[in-house]
Length: 116
Image (cartoon, rainbow, N blue to C red; front, side):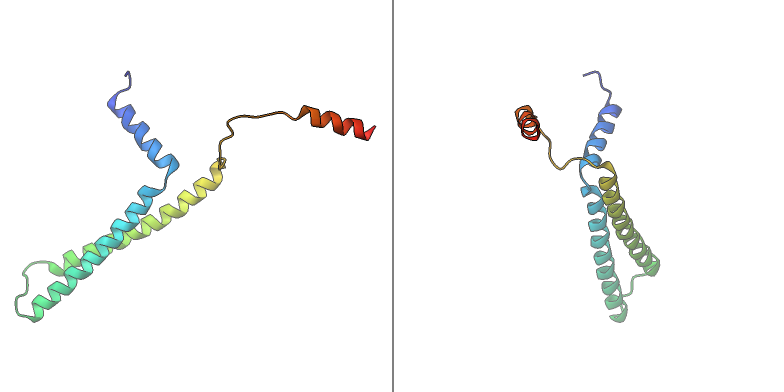
């Protein structure tokens, strides 16, 4: 086709984001997974510290960064979901597509005849 790779990528991103809020939900889900993982790593590092096998380095800083980053991902996902719902309301797309229209002109004539 005549479309460049960049144009095709823009079309794919537009198609994904126009009809679904799944990417926003995935961000929230990834944030929850990272938060659980950081709590597991925190418990493991506390267990190793009390066991006498403390890991040297910036364990606390890394754990705090993981917790803050995952909390930010969850927050962004929630805010994004709200914005997606607002966007859906503003678009006012129909819930269904009408494939064929039929006219009821003969019904209009009957109404006119009854009124006279």
